[in-house]
Length: 221
Image (cartoon, rainbow, N blue to C red; front, side, top):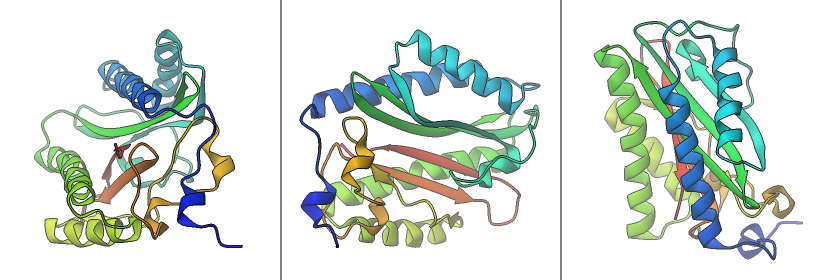
């Protein structure tokens, strides 16, 4: 049976847009606090351990998806792929944080890319992921297009900007926990106009020549 667009945007009785935005704000606060404590010489595993301490301090109820902190070439890995090894973060390096956390029964999901040192190519890559996200989000706001069209537009813009968009990462539903019972699927496969407060727009790009990439995600709200 094929679910209707309205069924794919179903929520539970506790759902409130204000609480979704609250959860998202706290998730972004967690991302920023974690990034402030990541430094060269740290291993990915150490960064993940530290992230749990930050989340506990912020009063999280639980994580709803595993925390991914990817260093260097692991920034090319998709969500479902395991990191290769347990790399040390270098003095000139790139990494991203991807968090899915429940606050007050609602799912926050946020991710961003950071750079140690002053390598211009790495900084350009990190900026490009956020810039592409902002352009796609603006397209959603201005044009009211479908999720399918959003990712078509994202791929086209990424190519024009000189990056490769990872089309295996197409965004997803969020809601009051657990959103999975609503089976909303990927944003990039959603044929309707995505409603605010229900969908995460994910952008993952790869450098066209160098062995790393960048990631940025946030709630369409």
